[in-house]
Amino acid sequence: MISGLAACRGRAALVALTIAAWGVTSGAACGRPPSSPALPEPAPSPPPAPVEETPPVVGPITGWLRTEGNHIVLPDGKRFHGRGANLHDTRSCDSCSWEKPHVEEVLRRIDVLVDDWHANFVRVLLESYADKGPGDGRAHYRNVLEDADYFHDVMRIVGHVGKKKGVYVLLSLWHEPSFAPLGWPSERTQQVWKKLASALRDMPFVMFGLVNEPERNDDGKLDGEVWKAMNDTVAAIRSVERPDKRHIVAVQGTREWGRVLDYYMDHPITAGDGVNIAYETHIYDRPARFDALVKRPASKLPIFIGEVGPVDDDSAKMLPDDIVKLWDLAESLEVPWMAYTFHTNCPPNLLLELKDTCGVGASLEPSPWGRMVKQRLAKAW
Image 1 (spheres, helix red, strand yellow):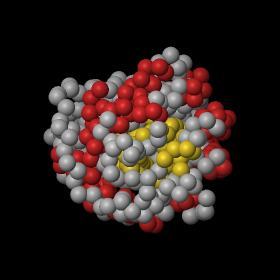
Image 2 (cartoon, helix red, strand yellow):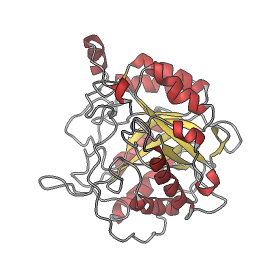
Image 3 (tube, helix red, strand yellow):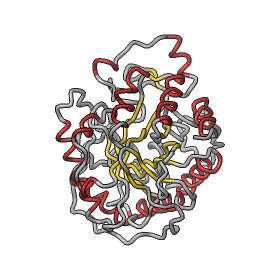
Image 4 (spheres, rainbow, N blue to C red):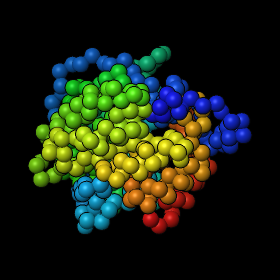
């Protein structure tokens, strides 16, 4: 998500030592942030699965969000001060997909993040793969169109967030075999969203995040194509919603792994009359870019920061002090934010690192990065 001109910097030795203590590891390709999984080869597209009835989900106790001007607002018209973290599904950053699903572990982590850390905004990352992978293969890996048990697990996870009054969940496709080669939604992705949106159409505490991060496109030449893919997917969601109950749908930045929202400032999403569209950016940058990536788009669009975290490698650089400055700016502009990620093995980790394990039943003690986030969430906004 960092431009090719600005991203590939050498690593300062002292800073590298500081960041290492925060559970941060090196990324891969230049410009790709640590959260961005390598995209799989697109899976073959079988006929769309029929939309299923909604599994039991706890009745809503949290009201509908909406967009108003350049802000996301609560049912009473006050601006939404959402803060929290990313949280993985039962595949758990591919740490838990090699054994049976542990949905209770996901629910436990939601409890800790919300009840103990006091998050009121949770980005749940949905993760699917095109195949079983090497060796004996993954025990579960297909998406909600092809795996009914996974679909029901997702409904349980979302329903559990719905038990937390005043807490909102951004349901995001994070690793999804239907994505186009550069991470855009495809026609097959639209079918995924139609199934999810139909099942959750009466759940006011849910927002939809179309993809993880549109990749590359540093020069913006593909902005129009990214915009069309996003707009078409919003239209697919609106086609299964009730006209009087339109969820907030988040579209991601068109450039640099979801960072840059510029194109939307002059070309907002138009599907469904452009109602209840939010614009999501992921920030792994130094403060010199904050005006361009946050302040300028926030002056015109209802935006939020879907990911932020400490990183220092050839693809990105953001120091702990930079994050504090970003939080200060975002909260002054009333821009919601979420940290990456509530995990033990998917850096930058908010929890103490546990390598090569699924982590079921782990203590969930915060890492230095996690302590920083937890302390921020304890402060009034």
